[in-house]
Length: 354
Image (cartoon, rainbow, N blue to C red):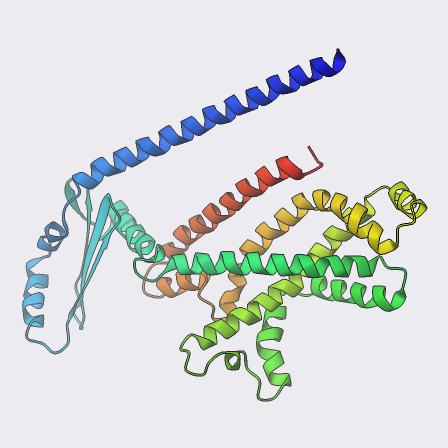
């Protein structure tokens, strides 16, 4: 009777969870549809590119006419279109330079030389460039995600060997593993990146990360820097993950070791078939946290010239306001929120801490 009652209770709870999830999903879906509908309405009444161009002052128009006969243009025109809002700017060169900015929104064209519309225009320009329409911020986001995923994947494999080596009773195995973990946890990641990217080519004469790729490859420098970054992040994350693995392994009750030994299993068999499978579930929350930490630390690759989100933001900011870092921060937040949500689902499904 008790087992039947428990089954009925579990089915009711699971049904409630499903209904609650369905309700949340519907709310999210309706909200997204509503936002898209509103954006579509604004897009339909958004001023055209020509309307923004027609707003240019007589001085700008005169310079544009003169540019038709010049070998070098004196007016730089920027036009950015973000579906429901657009932006245009005109900047002349020379001593008496002129700068005009306009934002098109909700059927109107507004001067964006100062005030709130100026800030809005800058955000449109920076967001346009970040999304890959101009200078690809999506490339930077992809680099950040790929670098983090590969580093954590390889680091986790190496960390298992380091953790098992650290808890080994053989000092010839445990001491080097302890030294490795101490070194990479005790030194700054940025210094480790510098050492791997700059010091290794200095030690080994004739070697360069660029030489790993075809000499005719124009992206060889960046590919070499990417390989160096992967090695640095892998070695660093392996040290931190090793402590996670060690703690998870040592949290398993010693009685299971003794039971496995009584059954005639070797140390390797015990680890492979009993201890590590159980430890894996305990490692999920801290490993997910380490992934998010590395995701944010990936911004350090700007020191070796890799075009991640931070580097591209810094490049864009060189031509104007530093407000560009706010959209960059939002992109980091979106990426982190996405992976946090995914890891939350994984933890609920597999973690023992429920």
